[in-house]
Image 1 (cartoon, rainbow, N blue to C red):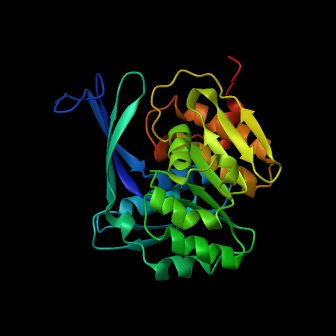
Image 2 (cartoon, one colour):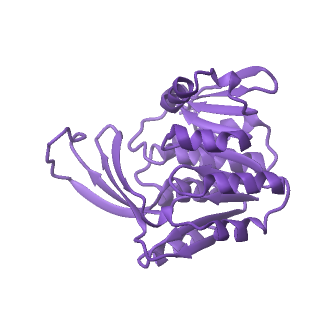
Amino acid sequence: MIWNLGSINADHFYSVPRLPGPGETLAATAFRKGLGGKGANMSVAAARAAARVAHIGAVGPDGGWARDLLLEYGVDPAIASVKTPTGHANICIDPAGENNIVLFPGANREISEDQIGQALTEASPGDFLLLQNETNGQAHAARMAKVLGLRVVYAAAPFDLDAVKEVIGHVDLLLLNEVEAAQLIAGTGKPIEEIGVRDVVITLGAEGCKWVSNTRKSQHLAPAYKVTPVDTTGAGDTFTGYLVASLDRGLEMEDALDLAQRAAALMVMRRGTADVIPDLKDIQDHDFSA
């Protein structure tokens, strides 16, 4: 089972002719709203990859719809209601599918240690704890997870060196994109092979991903599947959710990476975030050789 301490956001999408520059005002050509947040995206992706997932998070007085959607999407909600408004993100997307995002954390920063502890007391040794940097409480959750015998997966985004340093000693699997990996190397002065984490996966966008196994002293490059992207939002979260779900289901890392790559490839062909994450049947039905 996967326990995900993660963010829950209302995503506001704006289609724009190009990404706006400093001081520029652009008229959007379309607007839509959906469920998002890196945490919620990862939970939905893991559930659609056939894992059992409990989401530990918080929403404001306006957030009941998000809890209901997570439940509808197959996620067990361990979600608190707080006075702070639900987190939200304003996302601009250009015709090539690239985006920029302004994020309001809101209720995602109001998760109590008691709430985390109450959720994780239901966990079993060998379960996964999944973390990212859009909530508070990561270090407390990671310490508790190790005491309980859970495997800790940390997607270190949005990147914050201080947050990484606080958590990394408890992490079994670290997920980074290429920029975040460079920031970690610069911030610690150490190569990825010397940071003290058993397994590191670095996503490389259209080039695929690299798995650095510090126990095997080996590296493995998994190429990406070639598709035409329309929206890259949530692709990394989809990759993460599928990867952790696949490992939870007992797949070997190479096979888990391949399935996660396929899921991310389908995701960039869709517009939206949690609401449009592909399920296993979507992946099985898609001809990636076409």
